[in-house]
Structures are given as C-alpha cells and as structure tokens.
Image 1 (cartoon, rainbow, N blue to C red):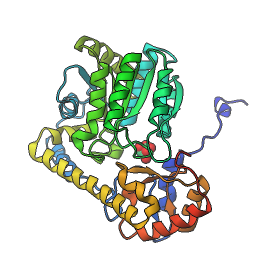
Image 2 (image 1 turned 90 degrees about the vertical axis):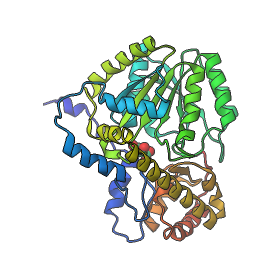
Image 3 (image 1 turned 180 degrees about the horizontal axis):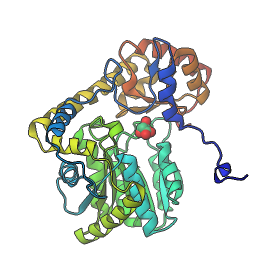
Length: 394
Ligand code: LMR
C-alpha cells in the first residue's frame, strides 16, 4: 500500500547541531568543543547569567497567569528591547519572535508576501541556515564573495551589489560575522549604505551577537546607521547569546519604515505571518529579558556579566594567537567565531585523532577554548594543518 510517508526521503541531521551529540558521547578526557556557537566559561559550562536567575525567581513569585499574549508576544519585552537597541525610535516597530531564526523567518515571509520570489544577496560564506531559510521561504539566493584570505573582499561585494535590481534584498551580519568574525570596517559600512540607498536595495540585517564583539553600543551602531541611511529595512535580533537564553528562544524582528504608518502596515503583515508559523512566541525568556531591562540593578549586572564574557572571548583569542603565530588572525577577529584555513578532511582528523570538534568549514567557536586546552589544540592543529592546507575562503 502506498503511503504519503513513502514519498519522503530520510534527511541527514543538521551537521552543526549533530556535533553537540557527538561531543557529548565522546569519552576522551581532553576533548575540546569548538562547535556550536554558545558562550562557555573556564569550566566549559554555558552558565545561566546572574540577572537571568534573579529574574526567574521574581517571575516565579509574581507571575499570576500564563494566558495567551497574542502573535506579537510580550509587548513589555518588545518595548524594553526597542528602547535598549534603538533608543525608542518611533520609526521602528518590534515584534517578539522565537529566537533570531524566528526573526529572520518572519522577515523573509513578509518579503516573500510583498514580492514573491524576491532576490536576496548573501555573502559567502555565511551561516548555513541563512540560505536554507531563504530557500524554504521561496526567495532567490544571489551569492557573492564576502571574504578573501583573512579580510572582507569589499570590491567583490560592491561589484556584485552594483548588479542588483532595485527592490532586491541584501542580507548582512550586523556584527561578529558568522562564520569568520570578520566584519566590515566603518568606512565600508558607509560606502555600502550609500550604494544600497542609491540602488534602492532593502537591508535585512542579522544582529545575533550584540555585546560580544567590540562593545554593546558599538556592535549595533553600523546596522542602525545603515538602516537610518536607507530609511527602511529589517533588523533580525537575537537575545539568545547576549542573555545566554539559548534554549528559551528569545528574539525580535525590528521593522524600520520611513514613517510610523508604514511601520504599522509591515508590522501587521509580520503578525499574520507569525500566526501561521508559531501562532504566538514562547514567553518565558522574553519575560525574563523584560524584567532585567526594566530594573536598573539587574540591567547593570547583566551588562557587567556580558562584558566579562566578551573579555574572556578576547582573552582566549589573544592566548591562541600568542601560542600559534600562524593563528595570529584570531586576535583581530570579533565574537565567537573564526574560520580556520583547513580542509574538511583536516577537521575530521582533529575530531577522530584529537577529540577536537568544529564545523566542517573550519569554523571554530573561540569561547570553547580553555587556557589549559590551548597547547593541545595548537599541537593538533599544526599537525593536521600541514597535512591538509586550504584557503580561508574554502
Ligand atoms: C551557530 O551558528 O553555532 C549558532 O547560531 C547555533 C545555530 O543555530 O546554528
């Protein structure tokens, strides 16, 4: 008997998320997890932040209902986050989403509704889920080269975007580029903003790591300035990393329009798209963020702990660069990720021979190091890198 199910092919597990299970099952004592992008402390743990714990206690005591909130989610969260990120700019509308991925998906659905099959320009390499989300939403992916060996290939980026048609979308990383940690320089952001405005291209900016790169305000500034310059666009925001709320899935889509009325129209379309995806976003993590942002003491403590996290990542980057001159570029890059110039085969050898886990692209999560683990990593890296060199753009 034929079944609808028999039409389906078995799908492979997401290669990045599969590393979580593989690492957990590896019995070796000296194993190192440089895989999925989560912050880790010096014991390898991804801690619940102090302010989050305090907010959870308060929520437990004070919450009187878990009744539905609606497709826009927690309005107090959206208002507090909008003030934090944009300074409460009225030309922005903000809708709560399940994580940054939910925000990206919502923006893409609104774009697909406004302009079916729209072309979206995406630098390569990028977070693999960007292209998967675009394809799933029925949008056209237009790749262009983002990186040379260890810097942005800005001429290639400009040349590609010169050929874009008015109304095309440009997907950008706000800070802490995933997978390379290599961001545009301020002058490049300014040139890009002028080009987008001139060619009437719509920015969709993924800002998933605010506070983990150069500093909280500095990390969002280029994205906000570009949106200001262009007059309209989307900012897909994640609180998963900077509040360490990963599994709670806390994010928001900011819609920047030329006037509040247009923002309201786009917002209503986002709510319709939310309703047919997740109906309403989960509240717990968003309620915690609201409590933290609305309380001076908790907000100050959260910012202090976030600064400590950023400093730890920077310190680890410096330590690896000092231990291995051939990895000196790590010290210049920002946020969790860097891209090692090694082949997938060398990555596989690091895993099987040394218990060192990373994405097949050679992407590492710098927060996965500990100071004690660095000598083992450098020795292993130099061993496999000489066996199988590759270029950083591979
Ligand atoms: C990552 O790139 O490691 C994170 O954004 C986790 C994910 O969902 O892929």
